[in-house]
Length: 496
Image 1: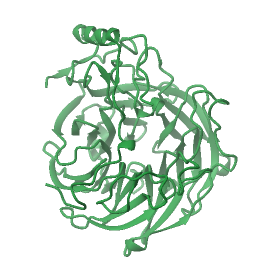
Image 2: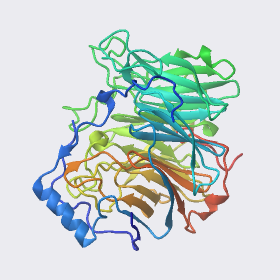
Image 3: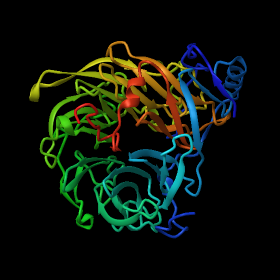
Image 4: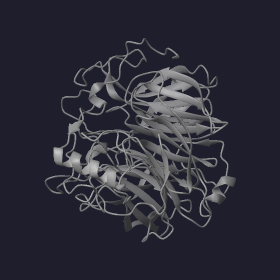
C-alpha cells in the first residue's frame, strides 16, 4: 500500500456527503477449534449505502479529499513502522495492554501476545483461542484478565454460544497465569451480572481488584435483570487467583441514572457503566456510564464513593470511556455515537456530536466538580462508508502539556493537544482509506496507546500497528518509561 505524507493535515469539511449513513441497529489450544464467538456480539451485517453516496466517495478519492481504499496517509510527524496482520485469531481486534517488552492484544476469538522489544518488527509469542466478546484485556504481574460479554454455554475456552435467557449461560471475567508468556494458563473465572463488557484493575501488593462494567439488562435474562445500576468488584489474590470472588456491587445510580428517551431524546438510558478509568496515585476514578459521567473516590477500592456526576443531554449519546490528564485536573470523556457501527465523522453529524468532551476538575476533596470546557472531534473528512467514532486512547506523558493519542475506528489514529481545555487541536494523525465504498463497515483502530516511546494501535481488521511520532511537543515523552501499562489504570508517570 502507498504511504502518503500529507502536510498540512487535510482540513476541508466534516463529510464527503450530506446524508449520514444509517446505524447498524498455531494456536495455544485453550479450547477446541469448534469454539466460536457469539454472533450476537459481533458487528452486524454491513449496511449498503446509496449509489449517490458511493459515487460521492469515489469522487472524493479522485480529488484527494479522502484516501483511496486501504491507502495509508499520515501527517509528516508520524512514521508507520510496522503492521502485523491477523493470524490464527480472525475475530475483531480489540483492546491492548503492555508489560515490559510485551504487548497483549484482545480479539473476539481470544488474545495474542507480541514481543515488541524491537518495535519495528513485533514478533508473535502466543495466540490463545478463547472466544467470548469482546475480550477486553489487562495484565498485572503474572496475571492476565479477560472480559467475556457474550452469553456462553459455560466458562471454559471451549464454550459455545447460548442464549442469555437460559439460566445455565455464563458471562464474566476470566483469569490467566502468564508467567510463561509462550504458554498462558487459564486459572480462574468469576461470573458477573450482565457479563463483563470492559473491566479496570486496581492493583495492590497482595490482591488485584477488578471493576467490572456491564449494562443492558432484561427481564428475560435470569442473571441480568434490571435494575442494573452499579458495577461488580472482584478481589483476586495474586498467590491464589483461583480464589477470585465478587466482594461488592456498589450502586452508583440510586436514582436510576439518566432516563434516556423520551425524556432525553437521542441519549442512552443508564443501565450500568461502559468503562471506568482509575488513577490510583490520586485515589480517583472516572466512569463513562451510558448516559452519565462520574467522578468518584477509590480510596477504599472495595467501596468506591461518588464525588460528582454530569450529563450532556444535547450532544452526548453514549458515554463510552474516560481519560485523566496527569495532574488530575481534567477528564476527557468520549461519546460512542452510533454504538461503534455508524459513519458519524461527516457534515450531517457535525463537530459536537460523537466527539470528546473535555471537563476540568475544579475544587477540592468531596467538593470537586466536573466543569465542561469544550468538544474535540477530528475534522479530517471521512466517507459515509467509514464507521468513525471516538474510541480508546491514552495520554502522552509530557510535563506541562496535556497530550493524547486516540483511536477513531476508520477515522484512524489522532494525536491532539488539550493543554488549553477550551481550544483542543490535532497535531498529528495516521489513517487508512475506506475498506470499501459500497457498504458501511466496522474497521480501523479500536485502541491507540502510547507506551515507552511508541504508539501501538490494534486495528479491528488490519492487525497490530506500530507508529512513531517525532514532534517537539511530544518528544520529551520518549524519555519516560513504565514497566506495565493498562491504560484504564493510569500510572503517575512523574512521581515514581
